[in-house]
Amino acid sequence: MTLTTEDQARQLRILLADRLEATGHLPDPEWRRAFEAVPRHAFVPKFWTLVDGHMRQITAGDPEWLETAYQDSALATQLTDGVATSSSTAPSLMLDMLHALDVADGMRVLEIATGTGYNAALLAERLGSGNVVTVEVDPDLAWLAEVRLHTCGYAPTVLAGDGRAGQAGAPFDRLIATCGFSRVPRAWLGQVRPGGVIVCPVGWGIVRLIVSGDGATEGRFLPTGSYFMAVRDAGATGTATHPGRPNGAEQRLVTLDLGAVAGDERFRFLISLVAPNISLSTERDETGVFTAVELWAADGSWARVEHGTAWQAGPRRLWDVVETAHEVYEQHGRPGRERFGMTVTPDIQEVWLDSPDGPCWVLSS
Image (tube, rainbow, N blue to C red; front, side):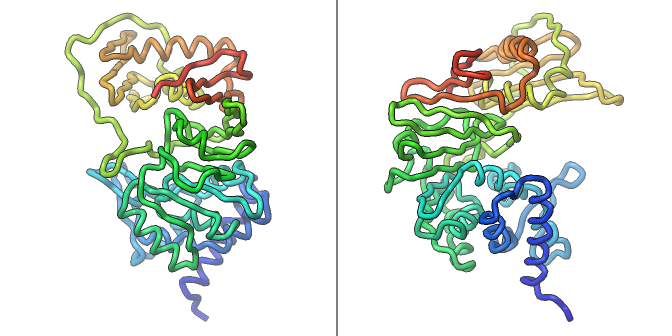
């Protein structure tokens, strides 16, 4: 007997759920039930994958579409000027964040960045549509997500707007964001009730904050890495354009090994906090040795290091910041994400190592 697309999709969901449970990403039976119920393929009728350095589009008419939709990988679902501006997050990372949200029956959740609507569907399946509000900055994406949600039998409140400002209906019990931030929007502190939880990508990590009633919200980063697309305005990409090599760049000698920066994923997380909103590229020789590192940001800051020399320009000296952070990183045993935490108040936001009294960095916007 030939299986229908829906039958095949359900089998693929169960197989993926088995793999995710075996690797520790799906320990909660309630989230497993939701994961098996929600059809991811319905939210990604077309997407792009990277093949040999180029973005290749896959649609529902392609033979590999369904199987690819149920792989544990992120899928780019919108390109703007050749840059991915929306995606469906890898299921393992989505589930890590949903588990960190620590929901219970009857809780109300505000989601920032609807994207395809798949994550909102998981929340609606777990908590009921009436307890989920989701906000998307791109009106076209918001409309598409709402259509797909309704087609699958879900009816959360879908709003088009800038989620950084929060939404009417507060306080919520939980807030989850699925786009990248350099700091937690101040408005969110009034969006979640005392004792509630905020799960948000900050830099190249995910912080879980417990909202307090005394104005200081605090929490730690999850062990897992994350590379979400940056929060953006409608019609923008959220990605800084490479400025080219600025004229008049300052020059100095450096001793920090490029591999210690470019080849250490845990240190790159710290870079994303101390030098927010940056892009980073690397170059290697034919043996795989790093020969150059370049960093740039939307504010015009730029740095390039190669052959033992650093060139820097713009309002921030990016390589100076990297070197200072690396000294702390080495002194404290090359810490992973789980050793970092964050304190958020209406006036200041700080990331700290091990405890609020340890080394800390003030987050800039």
